[in-house]
Amino acid sequence: MADDWESFDAWVRSREHRLVRAAYLLTGDIHHAEDLVQDALVKLAQRWARLQDQNAEGYVRRVIYHDYVSWWRRKRPRLAETLPDTEDADHSELVARRQVVMQALATLTVKQRAVIVLRYFEDLSEQQTADLLGVRVGTVKSQTSAAIARLRTLGPEFSLAPQEGGSER
Amino acid sequence: MNDADLRGALADAARDIPEPDLAREAWRRGRRRDRWRVVGVLGGVVIATGVVVIAVAIVVPASDPAPDAVTTPSPRPSPSAISSPSELPTKTVADPELAAFYESVHTLPHLSTRDNAPTYVRDGRLWYGLYSMMQGIPGALRAQDVVVGRDIGWVVQLRRPDLVGGRIEPKGSTFQPFADQDLSNPDVFAASRDGKYIAMGDSLLNERGQRVGSLPPNIASTEAWTPVGLVYSDVRGMMWLWDPQSNDETPLPDLDDVNTDGWTITSTGNCSEVGRLRPSGTVETAFEHCGQPIVTLSPGWAPGARLALTADGEVYDTESGELVQSLDLPDGVTALGEAIELEYGGWWRGNVQNDVAPKAFFSFTVDLRRATDNTPSHRYEAIIVGCHVTTGDCGRLLSRPADSPGVPFVWR
Figure 1 (spheres, chains in turn red, yellow):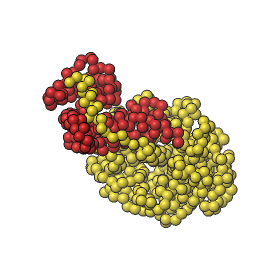
Figure 2 (cartoon, chains in turn purple, green):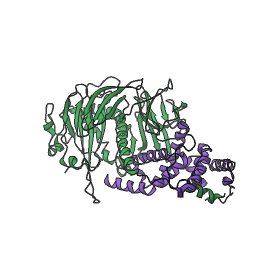
Figure 3 (cartoon, chains in turn brown, green):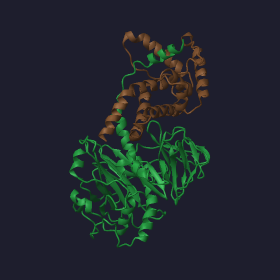
Figure 4 (cartoon, one colour):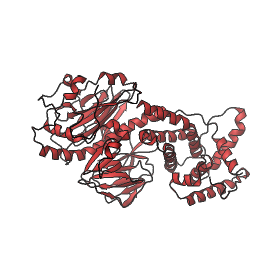
């Protein structure tokens, strides 16, 4: 038990920050993001002995993204409800950019948003993204294309040009 | 903006997210729920075990107890009768049916090994044990998850290599996959007690495994299919009651656990309550206990929630409120109680028929792991205790029947 806890603790500590950041990009709400990751980690804890030597990270990501889709279906959150407080004036530009990004993400469909976060924040390949979401690579491509097209309509800062082939990792 | 710009924008947007500290709470909640999951699964195992026990009881003369059993006739034991750890290895209840039950339970070697102990099904029995041990059982099917509808055999998920849902008939190891498979959420898997409904992923299946409808959209995991409907959790951990016929969803109060008989455990502060879930979603309190939390209940057919086991080894009669047994756990357990999480699992045995068994037993393991022992030879220790529901007699299960392939329990 002690060994299991120690290995679990070490595993979580090395990944939780990035997982929560990804979840924040998905949900637009830091509290929901932490809940999403926490719930995934609870499920991981239940299966730790079996998964620690396997693809625990893949499992957690899969739970987070599937739960995110389920959560979104139920909650249908408003745009970027809460953002981390940042009073420091030095961060004002960062805050402004973040608000633009989060509001832009909030205009995407739940699956488009998941694809964008997985591809451009988590740096997963199209195949990895497809595997994680349980969809075909073609679906990932079409969702990515649609998401980028949507973002492009939001302003010049999102005039992202799809890079055929070059975006595949 | 190119790919790199978008990556940079996303990274910037998430840059100020404070570093979380989620490990300890996740571990605590995960392990707690894991215990209940095991209890729930084993609750189902009992149905099958009951069949085996009945068969064994028929072929084994009542005067022919388990080979290692010490059958000292004893009246209902007082707590002190089994209070000394040194007595436990040789102490059993003098009941041939219980002895037969003990014999059958050797197929469930050790709960503490469950993390490495996939469930196998062969010859109409469920097998828990070390993977290496079970590899030697020809024809065994490895079950990822097991739920049981009464008289319908086992509804299982097998990993081969992907999860496949299906049914194993009561008398055999023949696996019949469902006609429709929904693997959208492996945490949603349950069967109603009559076997007419199966929850799998986002889908409601009929008894032939054909998709006949959808589950509530907020379902994240199944807890138990009770007589009043399916209890499930949403992604926030809130529990709901769903009636597949009316499609009504009712939010439930905060429950620690609910079993397939509809009995609930609820904790409030330092106290635990045993209650009965009603179709309205309310809980009717039947028993309250303050102190160490209640960890498991006897099931409805045994008869219902008659006994409650607390974390410190006390067994209460929930109908009379009386303490019927106090298991004085070894010093090491008590001392380590705060340092490591003691794990209790329970499984229950009763009549597989709908009528209430005249005799029924429950048993549970107490798994002891030495937190201070970090050597490779780190060993598990465990006891298994059985109690007679109707008399309250309790005794220790012999750890290793002569013909058991199971790992030996160590008592020090």
